[in-house]
Length: 488
Ligand code: AMP
Ligand code: ZN
Image (cartoon, rainbow, N blue to C red; front, side, top):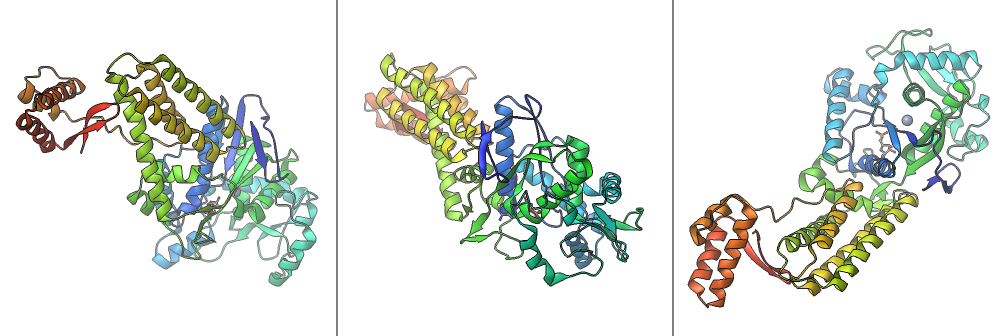
């Protein structure tokens, strides 16, 4: 498996620190509002990455924080006349819920900033003792950026270039304009905790470094987030951790490309956002994930409702093919042509191999999905050529391969359209004297009766059968693989 490191700008063969195990961390949201689908793009990308590592046999430990104390939360609480704890609790719950609805696996560890104050204070103390941080007169504690020789290595910035921008907002409590706050002195009415430097709260960059150390141990294999977090957030996380513990921080930095609307980054501040909740009200999580999988995680992703609708119809077609394969396997009309079946078996094998090759190449989901689309075309061609006389084992294997490879990407195919309602048993009993409980057997009996009526040109009976089916929401579809009853 090869993974691209955004620090070295190159792909390299993945070698975990501990054989067979992967420890990864992805920065979580600041819980002051509902997340938008730009945020979701990053979380879904890392969910797919994690799923592929697991599918490849690694034991993965995945940690993700919730930033539940921050200026944005405090501002939102003040606007709404609520406490900041209340706002944070509401949006943490909503985040956890919407991630599950998007079929994102829960992290193994989900620390909250407010539950980690002790370990953050410990890290800051150690940084001060080692000369990498200092307490200022105003009660803030700053990290001394120039004390870290490696500063800039995560995001590829040079300190001198950074100085040009930093001079604009000089702060007399800082020794150097580049220094950043590890601890912020309390302001009246804000949440705060006691510390050796007085009442205050941690800075944003501090929590991730302390949590990674506490829950995963440094260095970790993979640290991820959106590309907009590389500087300053990840740079600052890395500076603190490397100066506090001297063991390195993350072997591989992975950054996702931004989700765009009309060429612009989707963001709260631009107002060009759709919340994940509103998108999942209109569309399935599978369609959204398919849309996302069709672009490599590092590339920018253009979002539009048209593209999402396109993904939804692709998904219905994919589900339809899987379903046709299963149906044809259960209703084979004659001896299968072994050459045709061998052709489909080879196509399944080729698709599995290509899927793995693409995913092993820096999680190229776009290539992996393309391999599945090729298999779907092959499957449709097979069904057409076999004209009902399908090889049940190969057709079932093909349907399983399609469903399970999509599931590896966290994409669940739509519910099988061939799952027919129980009422069909009653209809079959009335129409053809069917006895028994099996819905599929009832469907076959009704189809046989319809075929016999048509063969005898008994149109009254054929129409009566159709009308009974229509009355319970079903229809007959005549396909190359034979006729079948489906939901209308
Ligand atoms: P935040 O709560 O702002 O820290 O964002 C949570 C995550 O979403 C971070 O990893 C961001 O990098 C990521 N993110 C924010 N906007 C976008 C976007 N438009 N496209 C992709 N990822 C984004
Ligand atoms: Zn972070």
